[in-house]
Length: 380
Image 1 (cartoon, rainbow, N blue to C red):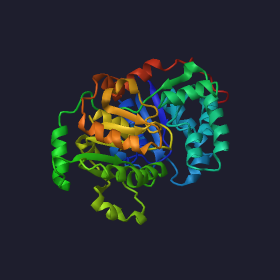
Image 2 (image 1 turned 60 degrees about the vertical axis):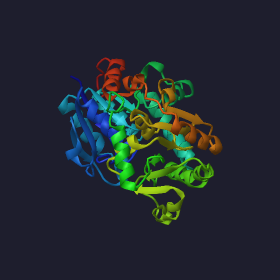
Image 3 (image 1 turned 90 degrees about the vertical axis):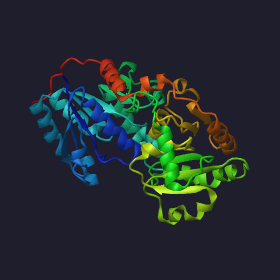
Image 4 (image 1 turned 90 degrees about the horizontal axis):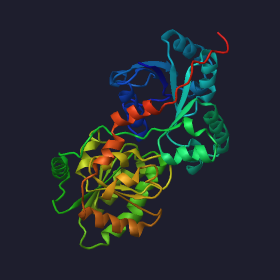
C-alpha cells in the first residue's frame, strides 16, 4: 500500500463550502485505498477525519504560508514515515513542496481546484498577475497534477505547455451509486416544514453566501430571475435559499417573503433539501472551477438550470435531461427553462453515477498516476 502525505492549508472539518467538502471527501475515500496522513491546521475537528491520520502542524495565522520551519518538520516526517508521495492541495505551498522534494526525493503532486489566478482575477484581486507567474512555475515543476475539470487540465496543457502525461483528471465525487429512492419522502418533509403546497414547485439555491460569486448569484435570483417567474401567471413555486454567511444588510431576506422566497439559513442536512427540490438554480457567472453543489444536485435526481459559466467542468454528455445550461446573462431564457423543466422530469442516467462515484474516481486516479522511479535526495 502506498504511503501518502497530503497538505491541506486551511480548516475543512466540518465543511461549509463545496471546496472544503471536496477535500474532506477526497481524503476520506483516498484513505480507504492508501495509508494516508494529512497535515493541516488545528482548527479542524479531528474526530471527523475518517480513514486517515490528521496532523495539526500548520499555524492558524496567515504566516503559515511562509513558515520556513515547515521545510525541516515535513522533511523529517517524510523520511521517518517512509512517505513516497506528497499531495499539496492548491499551488500556494509550491515553494515548500520543492524544498521537501529536494531533501527527500519524494513524488510531488499538486491538486488544483481551479486555475487560481483566473479565479482571483474574476473576483477583482489586483495581485492576480503575480499569482499567475507563481502558479505556472509550480505546475511545470510538479511530478503530477490533479485537475477538477477537463477545462483546467486542457488549459494547463495547451496554454502553459505542461506535459500531458502528468496532468490527470480528478473530478469532485459523489457518495451514492444509484438514483435515490427517497426523493418523494424528502419533498414531503420539506413541504411540510415550510408549508409549501403540493402544486408548488420547489426551486433551490444553496452555497456559502459570503463568497462573492455565490452572493452575486443570489442577487441575480432576487433581482432578475424571480421577477420573471412572478410574471408567469400559471407557474406556482417557492425558492428556498440555503447557506451560511448571508450579509446582515439582507435582513434574512424578510423583504422577499411575499415574493415566494424562503431563507432557510445554514442547513446541515442539505442532501434532504436537494432531493426535495424540483429545480436547482445555478446562475453563477464567476469564480472558476466546478460547482460541487451542482454535481451533487444531479446525483440526487434534481434537474439543474445553469449558466454556461456555472456548468463549466461537468461531463454534460452523461447528464441526460438533468442539466440545461443557458448563455450567461440570458435571464429570460433561464427563467423559461426553469418553468419548462420543473414539469418535465426524468431520472439521472446510471452513467452519471458510474463516472462520479467517489470509489470509481479514486481507483481511476490511482491507476492513471504515472510511476516515478525513486529519486535520490540532493542532500541528506
